Image 1 (cartoon, rainbow, N blue to C red):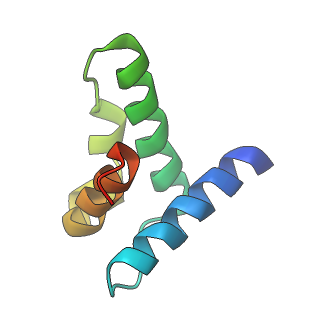
Image 2: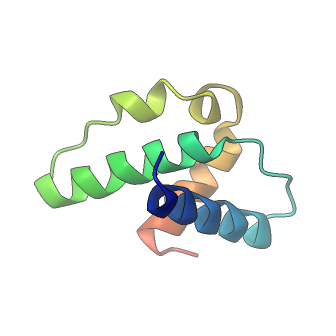
Length: 76
């Protein structure tokens, strides 16, 4: 993971923690994977979240994953 990718993931995780009173449990790699899948699907207008669905964030911490998607969509 590059420094820029780590920075993006860290900012997203902090944003999720500010919105919801939870301790973020997803790794920075998970956060960046979801971010990359989301932005790629928006650019191509195709939904392929297979990499996101393979993350621990999606599989074990679904609420946190949903909050992250809301942040990415600009809903919060």
